[in-house]
Image 1 (cartoon, rainbow, N blue to C red):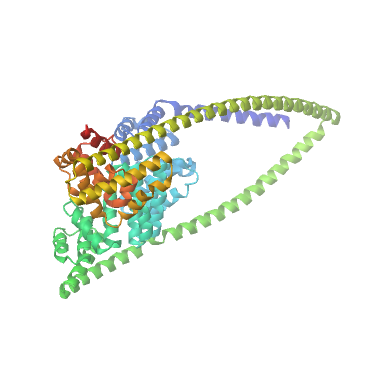
Image 2 (tube, rainbow, N blue to C red):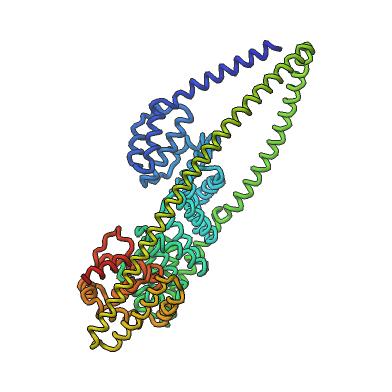
Length: 604
């Protein structure tokens, strides 16, 4: 029996050596070239494709090498916008990775399999591939590709009018994009979800998403290309007629896509400007897309009905009804509509099969283990009891000594780690105290600067009262009111008593009641007190509203207060236009500090 065990060990060693020799090709030239291509796949996808195409086909040997080459080349083709409609390239990856790959390799295989099905127009098969990929979401590490898969699956949900699922997928994808710093893709996914909430007529959810999207677009202006179409749909579907008209009139001169043009026409139809709506639709040529054709017909039918052209509306409605019936029939004839339910049943069946397999294998392993145990007991009993007892005692003593040595070593390491941690904590506390001290010094300096600015403005207004008593009474009143408020605010900063700033706080609440009157009176006061500064703004082509906007910063309001006062939708657009006219450096992020410093320079 001992000879048989030795023979079995020799077989295992030989197999291990054979597998090791077989795997050496991994580190050969072909594998290194593929690693090189994978390394530049995201940053230089065209270079990755060139590297892969320069690998001779004759050198791609072995199932694993062929699978990796097939997957990398499919990725490179997709990233270079080369759509493929056959599985000629990807098939080796499908054959190998679906059963033998890691979760990341399986996800990539399913994703590019789904992309090829989409290129073929086979949405049913594409959905199955994407769902198989999403089933791996708890085990994969490639967050970027998982987000891409969720978005692609969401696109197919949108085709089925499963809007809730479409929204859910895009929200999940946006969170993944944010976690890996892909800002533009995060904005795109959030705006997709915003479109879904608009279709569901869920204004509160849409408002919540807008409050997320607008700051993201302010940080990354390139995202405005994604936000504008969604903001247009939101305004037309969920806002009041006055808001719709203001929005459409403001952006009517922009170059619009076909879908945006139809939304503009629908918006003008809702506010009763039917001629503008029809004029916009007249510039749209018939579309091959049935969804675009349905939307076009729906918008135009509504306009014709409101104009009293019932015969034309009825004729168009007949075409629309027939087209919609064909589309619904096509949709119902596909498995795509029931893909979720079918996939759930398949997964349930697979789990049942796996449970049965586990029971069978558990039984087999139990029997096999029992046989081994019986043989081992027989072998142990065959040996001398005395020798067995002695060997057991020696083993126990050796194990006890090893345990004691290990415990002593762990104790020493624990004490060393404890001392190191204490030293690090002391160093962190020291740095924190130093940072707090620097912060306190900075806040003190800022407070002194703000007090000096308030005193300067107060003294300037007092001098203006004394020297220019002939000023018009409205301007004198504005100056006097501003002077009283500055005195109160200055007293509050010096004494740290909030009661002195009560008139200032009440003034902030009052100005919300009549924004136009307040902003105009503030501008007149600055015309009187800082004429050179105001003339400078006018010379740079700033409108009265834009000067009023800057005067809010000049009187001491912060960016958050200005944004709340004039409403967030227009805030970042006005700020961008003013920066452009004044030629403010993009790195000058605080426009309030810039305006107050500019005003101070003109006082010299």
